[in-house]
Length: 321
Ligand code: HEM
Image (cartoon, rainbow, N blue to C red; front, side):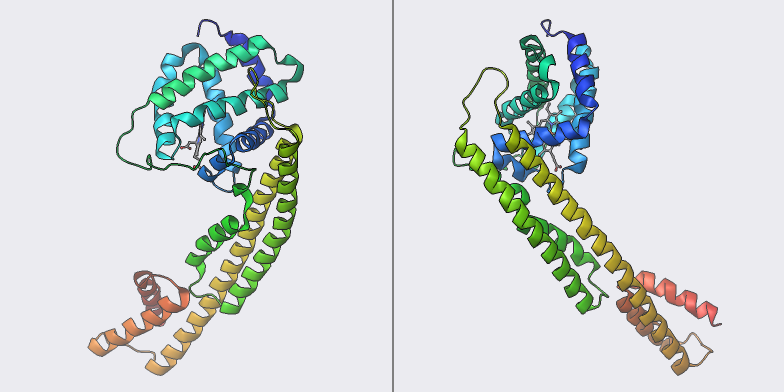
């Protein structure tokens, strides 16, 4: 670490950190161009991940002159990575992507000396993170198919991933929904995804074409990654995130609508029940049976747990005396 010029490294980071999200977007695009299979380790949306990554780097840079003090948190981070399926052999790729992105963002400010600062600092961080021992079994056994057969960034935007995630999450909201509404909603989202898929396919084809045209040669220091490919992949990433946000908005609107419908249905059931049972109650066995039956109807209509429905029901009972 003695070779690292801390002031120089910090100054370079402060330039880059001003464009933190853009930097991270470009960093991940570079990483996935270098090794597409790594995309599978991450969620479709990288919105939060970008923030976390930049924050972690900022934290490391701020403590780079006393990395000893950062060791416990780096070890924790290293263990969390192990448990997410990150293998030690992935670290050089992240280092390569990081350096390439720094070079791209710093332009003329990027010098061999600065490259050496970052290489040195990253090597220490990567070593601490990979040496963190693993407790428990977690997901460490996850292995990725990382052969030379990787061909282009294919995993990051497939509609199946977007769709699968969306509808898996939507399942929770289905009870009490009007089926037709759910279908219409799914059709709308599917159409939207299909349209964006077409755009993503076009971008992927373009990236593949670029990759084929300029096979990368291993170089000293930062790897050469086609800038246009990085920019296209970054666009594709933002497109996927937009799709998820739009779909989530549709889902929320639909959930609110379904909730209103269920409440109306439950109100109607309550009115009918009150009319049938009369306004006065005696808490005998028969009455309790009726109460339970009504609570079930209410719980079914609202899609809420029986206990919550029963509480709501008792509230109704008090209201009608
Ligand atoms: C200096 C090196 C690295 C830093 C500073 C870093 C930073 C981070 C941070 C802060 C998180 C979020 C952790 C959390 O909230 O629990 C994270 C998650 C993650 N990182 Fe890293 N990371 C590094 C290296 C790597 C490497 C080498 C890989 C391998 C591909 C990797 C893949 C991941 C994955 C898969 C996640 C979880 C993402 C998810 O939950 O969707 N990271 N990283």
